Amino acid sequence: MPSDLKEFLRQAAMQVGAGGSAGFVEVCIMHPLDLVKTRLQLQASPSAGAAKSTTYYNGVFDCIRKMAQSEGVFSLYKGILPPVLVETPKRAVKFLTFEQYKRFFLFGSDKPTPLTFSLAGLGAGVTEAILVNPFEMVKVTLQANKNKMGQVPSTWAVTKQIINESGFGLNGLNRGLTATIGRNGVFNMIYFGFYHSVKGIVPEYKDPVQEFLRKVGIGFVSGTLGSIVNIPFDVAKSRIQGPQPIPGQVKYRTTFGSMVIVAREEGFGALYKGLTPKVMRLGPGGAIMLVVYDYVYAFLDDYFK
Image (cartoon, rainbow, N blue to C red; front, side, top):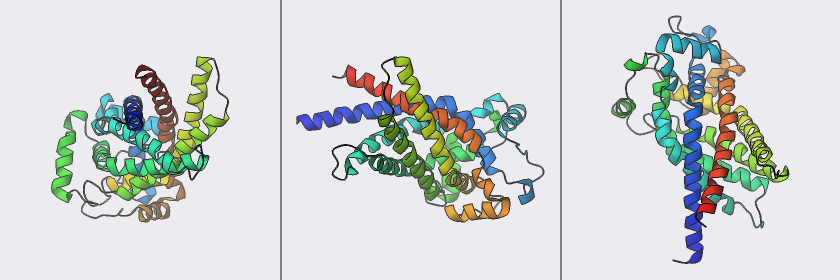
């Protein structure tokens, strides 16, 4: 085997291993906040016609309290199986494709620029979104279910139901694909662009604790900025993939159409519903992923030399 190909495969294997590890750790720690974010995004404001019989959540901690009381403590992990099943390969694909897109977007430069990192992140996010959207559709359906944990259908049952009723296409298992592409593409463009650009500017520390905190801090800001910018796409995605307000009638169809409806009926601020739990998850979650990736990659690189 040629040495260049052997080295490429070695690096690709390490990127897959490190990216998968980062995704698995992040989703296991941060999933409850993702669920709370989805619940907040799905509910319409009372003035916009939210049903009086449904539970209304007044923020992150109110949502956690009401879910624990009415659905059980373990309800905070509803819908965790789809992301657990997909996060390892998803993050592996994201980090692997990011490294490959970096080579494509060098534009003749001998080293990556901030533009390279941003465009590579955008490409990785789009690729990731196409692969994971069916899992997102199932996850949102499970997270929207307000029954007690023992009464919630299984992941496989929900998947079969969606396929039987609507098929695999853009009205079925791949509903909300463009919103997922927008959400993941924008997030990763900012996430990778900011992290790698700033990490190259802020001096490294020789002390391992200080160096760890440096990476965590940059990762936290990267995840926070990405979350703030991409959340309108996330709200649109939740509305498109979640239960429609009137059964049998599709109110939220397209990404930008859904944004317009939400802003018109509930105010522009409604496009930022779920921002607090999203930042609480993807700020530290983003830091966890990048730091785990860096350390696992370094470990594998040293181990397989």
